[in-house]
Image 1 (cartoon, rainbow over the protein chains, first blue to last red):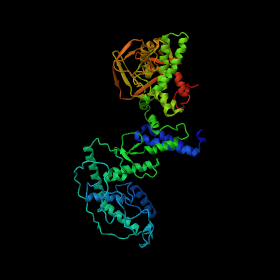
Image 2: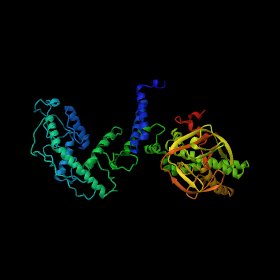
Image 3: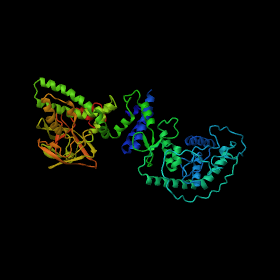
Image 4: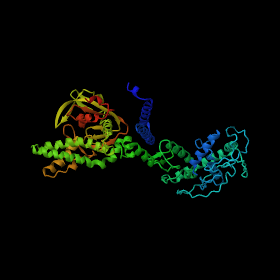
Length: 51
Length: 528
């Protein structure tokens, strides 16, 4: 039910964040940096969208 | 013009004419601008170990002033029909014979003597200079690439590998942190330049490098901001770009004013981060204990005995020492953030003692891994033995420390701040009674002493659950992660007896504090 309230864009962002989170545990430190950067870009885009 | 700009310019040109080039070993590099790069290969033929190749050598074609000239070519050239250029294709007429004269990068070593295999024959007339249709020129270039330049480039690349191997042999510990630009790197080690280029292109998708067209290549020491490049041992220093992104992302949020490196490190390895930061914030814990000292004075006024006061200090400080330090550290990074609590919870979720620990219960000895929620266990409070109930169990995998005494051993988690001091309530009490209490009696109370929980070492004396002293005979690090446990007890009880020792557990009052903002905790059901 909760999911139905989300827009498609929001769902995509949620999936993206989930994928980022799932990749973290298996990643080495260098790949974690890349994930960290992707996470920041994700948050930045979300922040920009809110504005 | 730098290489990367050249790539883009020429790639655009190719797209315009819908021309496909032949693939070669330089996949990812295989853009027309690479023809210039292949000049370096040709240069290596004439002077195989001469690094004085100028990667910025001028081309005949000026991409910044590419006005289309009169069309003189035929019209049967596919997408390029009627759009010919009267140019000398870069690298065709004078390939192999460029005039080379650049400054060497700041990188000195004795060039090893290496046998370069014979170069393949090149059937190229250096005097050829024919105005051509671009499409034809590309086809010709592709043929030349396949027949001559590619084998030459392969040979040069192999030679470069050998050179790098010789460098590694000669200077195995050399620090390459010399800030090479991509063109410079290409001149010195072309086989390394390719992965650098690819890594840089990848980073540009996520980070804004602005006008930077050649990354700062440094040795990969694993530090934050240095993005490793495959297994080359090199990294692109993207510290400034990451910090800029972080600043943009966190402005006007609770993370504003914090820094990317701290946040990354705390996520990457909370325990290590705590160890690194502990000394910076430990005085903050002293402040909390000073506050406790105020309470002590009140207790004195009420006629409490010095012994009870000392125990109260010990109990409060033991709690504050952990929660205070951890929260203090996290608050220092992320002021006012719920991340603090989540972070603390994650530390505790690693568990405190191994599943093999013998837990004393009213029903006899049980392995920690066999204890269930709702089971009764023995605990000790103010020197008396009680029965209490387990209301939740934390589990996690960790590499424990094995502490051996003459009569027993136990595997426990390293405390994130103080090392092997999950026994702190026992050992700590000992220190309180021996140091603080006498000082207190003489009017010399030094609160900061109460925060100096000493890590357990060989010959440390520990009280067991019966208040008998046990001397530590050895300490071992277990390198295989094992499942570790921690119990949450009914309110008012904060330790269990395991392997005869008094083992500190996470207090329920603290668990509740965690749960107020930690919505991901498995303990959520406890919050009511």
